[in-house]
Image 1 (tube, rainbow, N blue to C red):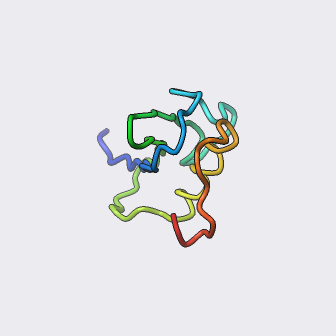
Image 2: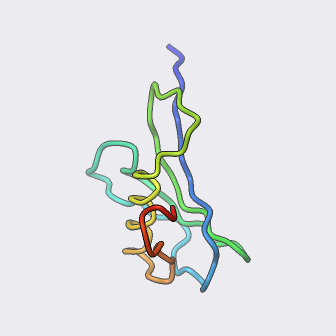
Length: 88
């Protein structure tokens, strides 16, 4: 049976060198942000991701973006958090 799986990532400025490259956010959690990764690049950092079966949306979810940033920042404080939720 074939069905869509939506994913969401963030790209944020690299203001320092993150310590992590790949991590699992919470292996016991379920839902769109139960796993994730941090990939530092020269000028930016890729933070991901989500797994949302049967989700057809192509629009980024600001609440999910905020959760991804918060979890990544807990793992590596050099990853900047926005000063307000509307900045995500």
